[in-house]
Image (cartoon, rainbow, N blue to C red; front, side, top):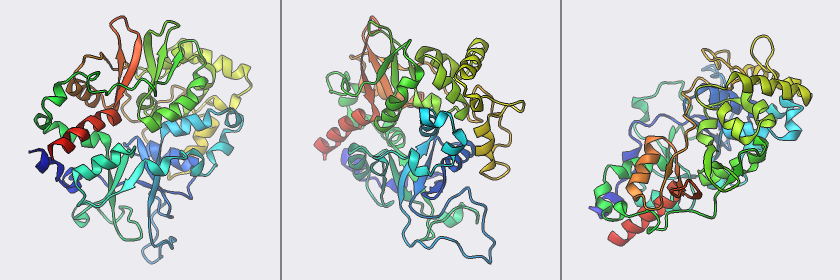
Length: 389
């Protein structure tokens, strides 16, 4: 059974996957912002070619401007990348200039290592091996593409349409055959060595929210989060990339002025409390960062700039207020926790149910002791498959 599962092709996992939305390396940060507001996915892929889905379609008689012969995905960006970039001190005073920066400014140095092209005939074992190396997204050519996509779907130089598979996709697929991994899946995470105590990112409740910027960037690489603790190490909450990805650039003033603890309340899916909204306004004015505040239309200067960089419908139906919430469904800011004796399958289901790639590990008294990520769980399942084949 395990051998048969490991030989399953990635094309099986790609069924029903939508075509990948692509940005060009020639695009700007504003282009990326407009693109993320326009799609449902939290990430948008970046390619080394000139193909970009936010460009208006060329007339049929006009040839494409791209002269590239090979199109390769070189990374991905999300709203957290943009928020962290705009929140840097040098960009707070000149948001429009920051948004006009090339998209490479928000690509991680390791971004090309987080994505990998694989053929649809690659096996599940190959995918797990690649993701075990730290790859987040597998870029797969879509087969039978002529049956499901219209002429406006972006095609690259080889006329191919791509989708991508995430670690979450792999785990949902494995969950359907969880019995294959018995008794490993039912074993406690501490016995399996799945608890990461080294790459544990945390700040204190009263630390400035801006102090988490570098940690947030690291958490994107490790697919984890930034914990908030009290002076005794008790877990109080988190600043989660998964919650922050449901916001937009209008949370930057809050990031620049609030404490880490207050910032978690500000980005809660219920909307920021009015007292915090007023506090942000006062502190922004005190710091002479008036460009960050919304005008009478509800837009701050960079919101207007970013929305105008795409087509006229890119922000239709969305309400960009100081609260910073996009049209996508907001995620609850309640952090997921487990205990060191929790079973692997229980932690896996907990993460999948809440659409996150990690679960915090705490002691009975609430002290933070570690984190379990998809990466650590993937290692356990990989070793089990290798031992069975």
